[in-house]
Length: 293
Image 1: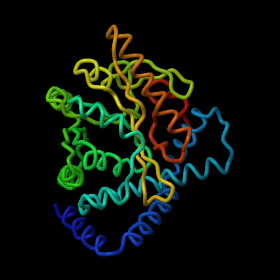
Image 2: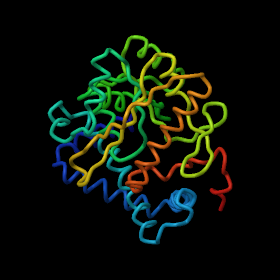
Image 3: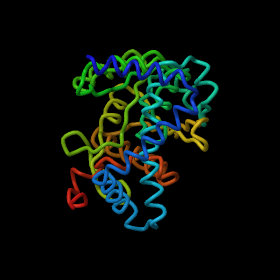
């Protein structure tokens, strides 16, 4: 509890400074973290080698590795700033592409299964979606130090997002969709045979979570992938891809819909590879050997 109180003091002090100062501080911390994380740097390069078949140049490796830390730091800062944001802060910084497709679905009273990834400023993306488009129910994982959970919850729920803890979250997502509300899920983390279906991602057979497709089919809720981009880290564009409709025989329909989600994500990553969270072991379930050494 003492550590949490000290953190709140740090939060109050940090927020008393201009945004540019806060940003520069977190970018500096990201550079330090990269220097002291050789094992995590190795994972980034192993993922890049696997995804791009060792086709990147040394400058590309270095840039993506460096930006991975920078992007994570900016997301952590966004969590803190979201606790102090008001509605106008989002409208001032965020615009949308292909929003009309989403608004059409919402006008029909349909719930939507939004899917995204740890890509770009995902904290801004998830919160702006709930604040500016439609409230969503999403999943979070408790901190090891549970006293910090209320901080994270406040950062997200004050802008229209309802959060369910990861263990037992499925029933909360189902309840929201039954009522015609929308949910949002991350689809880029490692999965396995138990919780996913086999798809192809960056040219490699792998497993991806089938939860979005299962929920979509059961509750007649279209899947809409979305990704957040920025050219200056200050102003953001949330791009909605075309809706994915899950129809047909259950097993095949779920597999097709999950592959379409993977294709959408891969396209986004290939367009801006530095924006993805390369430092997690995405392929650890099927290709443990790539993380050896």
